Each structure stands twice: as structure tokens, then as C-alpha cells.
Image 1 (tube, rainbow, N blue to C red):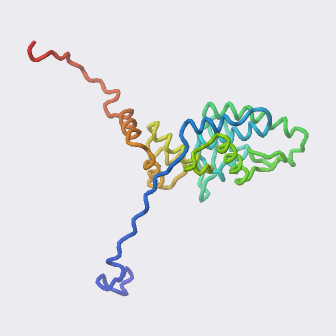
Image 2 (image 1 turned 60 degrees about the horizontal axis):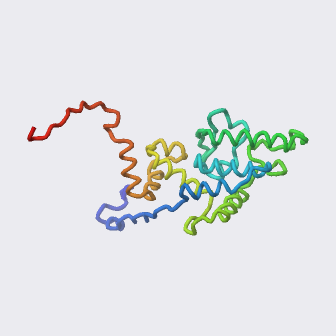
Length: 231
């Protein structure tokens, strides 16, 4: 029709309505489950500390597992990490205090673990296996599933790295972040993609966010002492 081969009345699609997108509610980890998963890891070996940092980073930044695998040493600076996302898009994610603490610990153990290897025997990725090779997505999946199983996570949570991303998004929304800022942190091209995480929030969560960001918070209003009508 746009090319004028047929007119509007002859358009066979004119009475066909767009299909409605199925609106599913995203079920993800709660705070107690996240705590149990992370605390299931001891801090006795290089692998222990590395795996604990991986889980902390997934929950704390919401990055995709592929993005985590591709972090290189030069991508990390003092306060943020350069993430190489989908479609060759780059973005920055913050380094929180808890992340920085475990990054320091991991970097010391990593240096000790590979100190006898030549530099060209060590891959330039941040997270390395015992052979100084970049960790795979499947290995990170196994790490998460193992500790989810040990922590007794609910059956309705799939326990995949993408569920860590769901947790991050919903927790940020509960804490009052705006959709645009969350979209930037998650590397979404469109805020409509990010807005689907709102469906998993309970009504009380929405009300609490509203209270935290009430337009009159911080506005000085002179209060006149009220006196009863009989006074």
C-alpha cells in the first residue's frame, strides 16, 4: 500500500490487529537468597575468592554473563568498569565498596597464583581459570547453580546469571532509581525494555518508591499551629 500498488481499501491487512505482547511477571531472587548464595562461598583459595567476586559483580551491577567474561584488565579503573555490550555498544558500570574490597583480594591472589608463568602464558582477561585462560559462560553458569543449590533457592527461580540481572533491576527500582538511569546501567537501547522489570514489583514497593520521591520532599512548608474550632 505504501508503494501504491494497492489502495487502502484493498489492503488485506487493514482489519488485522497487532498481537498483544504477553506480559509475564519476572520472578527473581530476594535479598535473603542473594545473601545465602554469596555467603555459601568460603574465602580459602584463589577459586573461592574469584567465584565470590563473580557472583557479587553479577548481583551488584546487573551485567550480562557474556559481558563479565569479556572484561579485560585494562577495562578496570578505580571507580568504574568499561563494559563491552551488545551491538559493539560500550558503557560504564560503577565499582561499589563491596566489589572493590573483593577485587583487591582477588587481584592479590591472582598475582600469586600465576607468578611463575610467563606474561604471554596469561590471557589478558580479568577472570581466569586455573590455567590462566578466560572463564567461559558455561563455567559461570555452573558456579551460580552450585551455590543456588546449596542455598536452597525457590524452585520458581531458574538460577541463571540472567536472574542476577533481574534481581539487580528490581532492587534498583525498589531503591528508587529512575527508568532512564537504570536503562543506561543495564545497556538497554530502549527504556521500554527496562520497564518490564516494573511488573515484578509489589504494590507496596511502588507506593514506597512514591514516598521516597514525593515531589514535596525537601520543600519547606511553613506549618501553622492548628487550634481546635472550639478554641
